[in-house]
Every structure is written in structure tokens, then in C-alpha cells.
Length: 182
Image (tube, rainbow, N blue to C red; front, side, top):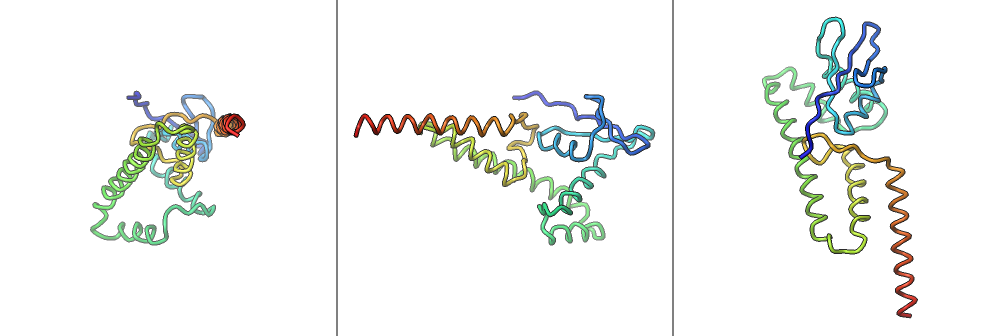
């Protein structure tokens, strides 16, 4: 089991600039979203007051993606969230949402396991598995298959090149087999 990393500490200066304490450089909201997509937990704190601003910035990232047309949250869900702030259900909503996302991650993991287990002996299994994982990642917006941090993904361009090379190799193998049998 992979060792859990501590959250990446981002400090917000009075100028509202965000500073990555690990790499000693300034980052944007999109950079922070990228860290999260790769499975890294982040913590954003105000340098002067020490206040935890993580929730505020995560909501801002979500709002920016939603405003760009990357609609993940249906309008009905957003409406219900707003309503929950004014009702007694407010105390139930966070727990419900957390459990729902945990179930989604578990289901995704089980679905991957169920798709890959019977196929292990099939030629070109690894190429198909990589395609399935890429598809699921695209469909779920990059959520990891587990509740812990996801392993750092290799460059997608490298994966594409490897997949093409593997497909070419398999095609050449099939052509050779057909030539021998034909």
C-alpha cells in the first residue's frame, strides 16, 4: 500500500498570490486543480492570519469550471445545495455527499476489477485495459479509483505512443500469422 503524502501546503499572501511551499513558486487555481486531479491533497492557508482557506478556493475552482461550460453538477443538485443551507438538512448534506462520492470511487474500482479479471489471458489485454482506464478517467473527470491519492500518471502522449506501438506490433503479428496460414 502506498504511503500517504501530507497535504501540499499553499500559502496565500496579502496580494492574494498563491505560493507552493514545496516548489517555492507561485501557482494558479488551475495548477491547484491539477495537483488535486493527480490525487494530491492540498491545504491553502492565509499567511498572515493562518486561516484555512482550502474550502473557499476549492469552491472557486469548481465555480470556474462550471462557468466555462464544464458542467459536472446538475442544476437540480446546485439548487438543492443552496436550499440545504437554509434548512435543517444542512447537517445531513455533507455526510451524504461524502458517502456518495466514496461509493462512486468504490464502484469505479470494482468495475475496473470486474472488467480486467476475466480478460487477463486474452492477447492485447494490457492495451485494452489502458484504454478502459483512459475512458473511465475521462468519464469521471480524473477521480482516482481509490479513496487515497492516485499514483502520478505518466504523460498521456507517452501512453498514446505506447498504445500505437503495441497495436502496430499486434497487427504485424496477425499479418505474419495470416501469411503463414494463407
